[in-house]
Image (cartoon, rainbow, N blue to C red; front, side, top):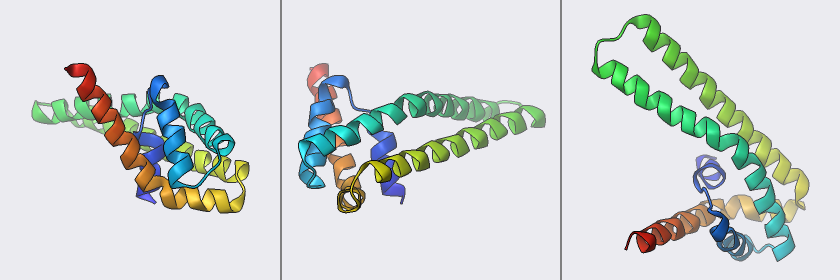
Length: 138
């Protein structure tokens, strides 16, 4: 289940790379282009909700680490920890909703193939993203 979360949460796809994501989904999950576009649309819809929470989560973790490294009172640590727990619960809820939305939008065989292909799709999109970043750094 963790690998499923990665595709739909980790792989932030730049607008220019959306076609790569759609092509990769189509190939690895054996989806037609229309279905792959539908999946990408749903992923993007939820990404706009998930990304701000993920960024806040990252900032909270950075703050929490800083508080632990220095002198910090228990109330501050408890408040930051509670915020982090709340964010993670919200992220899990949105990821579950996204999977439910995908399941409703796709025929059962297409959804099953997508679930099985997600780890490979995620890796391909991540590698592509890293290559694109390296290319732009040169």
